[in-house]
Image 1: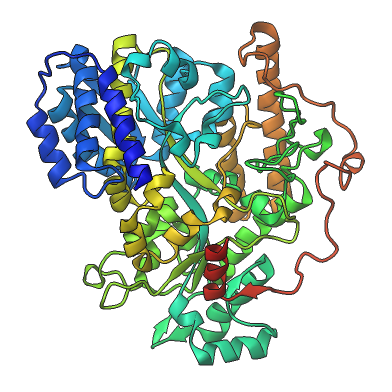
Image 2: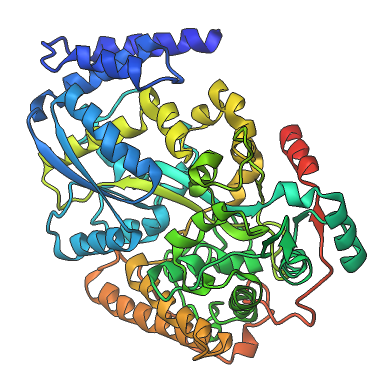
Length: 581
């Protein structure tokens, strides 16, 4: 009750500061959208209407303008494109063309606008993985200074940046916020809870492997479970089943599959959150206290081609070939994850929670992983870690698609786009948007009673995001100096492993070398023209890898035993531990 009174007082103060002027846009439209679409909410209806009135007043100078924004294709952005853009236009009079494309096309458009300074779009929702790029190139708008300066009049007083759970991911080494989170999802472990509970399967697994069938804590257990279902069980209820799902199509998606913390899940990199220092999950070295990347190869103190990274790629390739359904090696990101709804896979080590909405579709829609009452037959749980992993390291990846403004966008268009960006993440709309897309960005939304009620049908999603463990899943960090230039090197090299052209060691040697070559060119540009603001690479001179491997804060030396005994935990016990924390 006290919080409600404080919130009411806050909103009253906000509106008192709003200039008294004729509100020409249609408040009737705002009331209609609040009543019919934007429920439930963490705000009262009165507070929602006060936020909408602020948008109407702030948008008055831009009424009649048409702006263009771009994001990737996931359910959250489709809802924004089809529903929130329409609502925003009816409420403010600003028309928004919200285009959705594949992730690769979004990255390409962002890169083109940064390189050419031509205004292709007025705002982007692009991954916070580019935080190291934006904070160095400074072609993006520093939002901390923007909200206090040129953008102050169009910054929602009730935005409440502290409520965003991923704001640390969009904060640069300078301590400034460069992007505003719009959607967020983690790569977690997914498994068939109903199969894991079957007494006969639990008995068979215990007899074969000597420990309980449950959520794998390490990769050894994951591999045992994959073998168990693919090779030993083979069929459940008369249907051929498999113990693993992944993808391997030679496409940009394959590169993100690996840069999305796969190497650090195996144990490559250093301790530290949100990212390892001095070595991050890409294997790039950057000393603590420095903003200058020093190299990716082991010879320069990096770890992209170190034993832990090579192990990670070998396991991806082996599991895909031995335990996944036929054809999985030819799937891309968009094909593999929804394929689980066919109901023939026991587990997936690298599953994005962005696909939760796909996995909770009714059984009548062809989803074989829910029962007749719509209750999930599956659960999500923390990702297992490889043998090189240590306490204090990140445990997985969290995608944080974030609103990004560029200096190349004319000021009036930038202000209008910023209004739309804030509208899509405002507390007025956020609970409803999260109910549709299930990609949480606000702590207040996660804790809303509607998600407490819906939690049993979401397979652990709410429990995970309410747990303190969520901080162990983080995006690419500031060690990566130019995401578009370096990310494109990954998929071709990884694809050569899947095709059999190169071994994992050969591919990672070439990848690490390519990364150092690209960073060397960045270093020249930065030294000559401060292209990266003085925070471009400053590569270490190559040394004998033996001088780095196994040394304190260096890349890890090869383990004598890369498959320790498998370890699992009971899912129900895990959830109780989360609740206790």
